[in-house]
Length: 248
Length: 252
Image (cartoon, rainbow over all chains, first blue to last red; front, side):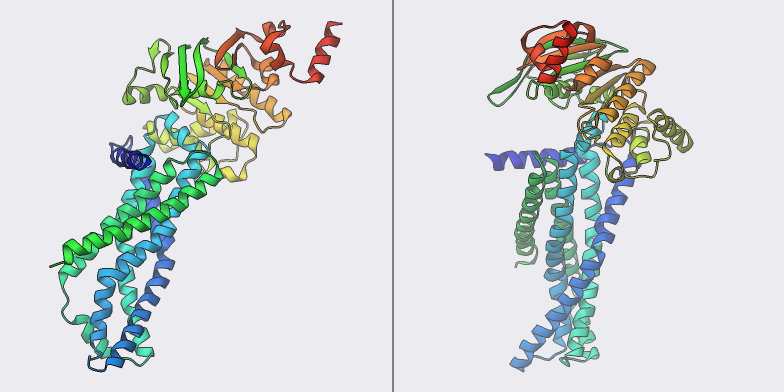
């Protein structure tokens, strides 16, 4: 019963989140503030994780391919690129952002609820779901794909560094592999994943944070629930996108 | 003037408000008092629309707030200012941005006009030169004063204060009470204050409504309240032995 209530509440929140704003300038200002929070705030961690993710992918795949011995090492460029674009960059970066951005959003809204700041907005006549939730979702949809593109680029760079430093392949071999059999469809699938993931990363924590009641303990609980639920939804949606868009 | 007619509200099995009716007068400090759990906060939240009543009606100068749709309520809300228990200042904004927010959202004033209006409000609550401070840098009393400044920035007709003295020392409480009283008279607002602070009752209680277990138990003013000699209101006012002795000595 609670599950159905939550789904209903979530859908109502989403509908209100994109209702007509009272003053467009205020909403765009808030959206830009959220873009900075989500984008700039996550830049360093995404850069570090994606670089090492690319590097470890290159090293471990090279190690395995070398032990087989029949596969040319220039394939590594192709393997790293495809792995990053289709799976590693969108999924791992999104799971990372579910923890960082998701808990941040749930905690922020939960604190605002407990300290009556959301009530203060309501009293003024502000549509809080539209003003507090809408800009967060919009900002995530704009910024998270950019972070994922950055993660792909840095992952490829990390893959090159890992492979070359480990003497698994040469720079020329890696570049040949990167250019081999490049499909636009892979990039389109990546962007489709980005949009779905960004929506999930922002909207579920918004719902959990917005509906907090009680005290500080409930804020922590809502934040944890938001991260867990977002992560589960990400892997489930990831499977269905891959299944329907990449399946034969 | 604000009227509430036969307001009833239940949460699950528990009926919190059991048919409360009262009239809150213009230009006066109207106090809702009562013990914890008597229904004060729910009454106040029902009046401003944060809680929907199960039955009954809230009227702002004859306009039925309860029957209004979301858009109509938004217009009435522009006429309402509210001071919350903890101030409810927006953490991510400076004092100036907090007070300017309603102006940014609901008016087409120029930046210079908005800044002037913010400074007038800050001066009114004796908080000049705090424009760039964040709520985290303010004391409890200062937060309340900034909260009042934000509540009055759009020149509201109705001011609601939820426990304005909670968490404050007696001296600061008097400062906040005086401020609310002066602003009420100056702007001729209908002010409704939810409190259990007897200093506030005796200091600014132009009109007092006493709630007990979800019912309106008594209604009057600060002079009349001192004539009470028995019953729930008496127990509430003279809750401490110190006050009871004081009253006995005064009678002697």
